[in-house]
Length: 150
Length: 194
Image (cartoon, rainbow over all chains, first blue to last red; front, side):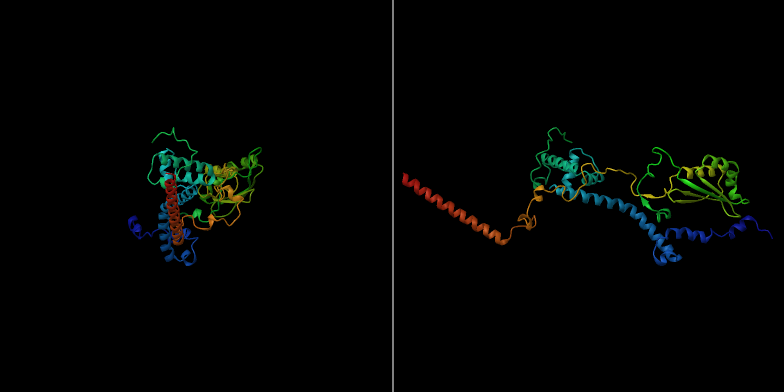
């Protein structure tokens, strides 16, 4: 007896389960213990790993930002100033450098970073920003007479 | 997350020992083409071998070419490089021109290129002013100071102790007394003058 096409399609099995499993096993190759090669555990743990990878992509950006802010804070406090005032002062001076560049400068070009700190300090002191008086007097080596107000 | 990167070596951008700076050394040393004489998957590679391989070998005498027929297996290309790297590639169902292009890609490649880049840039001089270190912004007077220093024995923001407060109050009281006594003496002397 000859079956027509539709009847055959109904009986057609899905994709080969061996290769389907192989696709997930490729993702668990670096797992430990039975999570690597026991199918039920692989199913569960691959799903978890992929969810974490998705979340991690966002969290990594936050972590990097936090790390850079921490570095900038430490570098600014070394010169006797604070990070919020530093950021405010740079904004007022129209120095639009992002946290990545500032953190890199603080490590690789510390003299430039010191100059930026003094600039921000002088600018905030001139503009009478709240909280700047607690930091004492700004360094006297900065001339911000010609700096345009933002 | 993909399998390709799991066991991939990581590294930095580099050129293979300035190849091509004043002379070029082809990094590909040996290429092996494996194919089947009957199956259709090897059709393109068979065409390449028939029509292009002799010219390829003649043009590139520095590359050893092996051709290996094997029954009922899919076609494969293995390229071996000067740095010991061995590149395996399936040529299953590839057309002749595809085989041609991939083989030329292997010819011009510089050995092991399959690394995950940690940084997409490279510099020999990362810092002009000198990298920050704990002594960069320190007072140079500390270089010749003899330790222990009196100022550094307590925390920077430590409030005065109760004893110190009382001592200070006592000192102020004495000062006031002195001032008062001084004033009275002065007034006495003034009176005497009058």
